[in-house]
Image 1: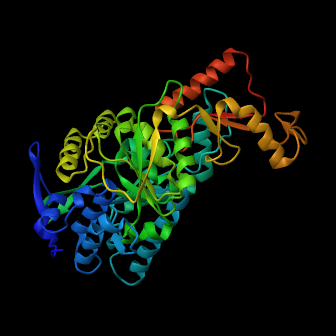
Image 2: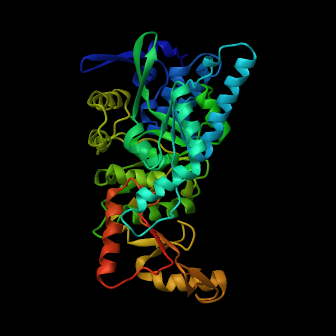
Image 3: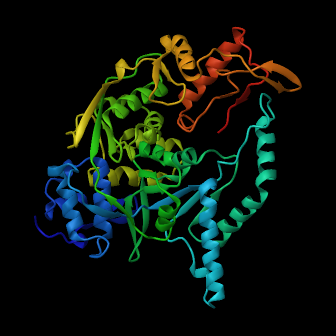
Length: 471
């Protein structure tokens, strides 16, 4: 294999009235990285990351060659690379300590007589306050406002500190309470699919990539943004411009065909996918979805599947850039010039996927006919414990007996001044939303319609059940 000079792969891309520079994967293939056009899309993103950051130190030509050699070894050869994400996503539960560390570094700079303003994140950081809400008020039209007000009362010191951080540090934004969960805000607002920066005075375009301090950061893989959850130390390192070491992964291809039948939802699909991948065993691996079935899924459906990567055990569950990606970016109000760039860049880099395209090389593959997906639910605890909706009643009683060895009904508890018999198996909180479905309007509305129909048919919520619809 020929020696690769990443600078020789630098190309220009004009979109509208603006010209961008980028590191071209087709040019890298011509320069000696034979066959890389057949790599999975997720691996192409990693290859571009290495190509753009080759410095002979943290990233060498040998790293580029090792990634190209994946086509032959499919990830069976251990080789460590340095991955530099474009940005970092945090939530308040794990993000506050990072801001404390930055503040401590500034304090140390002051004591040393140096300029504390030099301490700043080198990569963009978004901190979304979403882990502090509690359901104190429920079942009334005022519940949302009252819960947010109570949240501010409980956490005012932390929120003041975070607000200071958002104004004190460069490259650091804070999304306030009551806006939504971090994965939802990331999908609907923060992520761009193609990121831009500056290189030598020129506008640089490159894939949007992210690491987050929450395992379900992977939801963003549905928007063709490569990212996953990391620990606080790794996140802080990325925030300060340090690369994240990782082994070149195996990539399991998940081929989708057909279309979902009437009555089956994205939730049914994701439970089926999770069960299949748990059985396959994908811990420490990338999963990439492909095939003609993608054409029948919405971007929100793809995000729902990607969100569950921690449950099926993979590092990420990646979807390539398609027309649905571009349509979603437009529908959610992204800058039109950025959306045009996403389409042009993805096509120039071979990251665009359409029905009928040649399928990439994978370490191994699974296949699912979407038409075979049936309404189902998971429980009592884990998403891989999927049962068909038609078997729910019998499966619930069997699981309850196995778990507790008895039927519901035991201790007494006081609720709203009354006493009720509460026991194993009784529901005490019922929520329409979860981390998985909060950005999927179709399943949220479906859940709401089911609840509405249940009330119309005479079902009543028990007095001790807290009901919530939280963003």
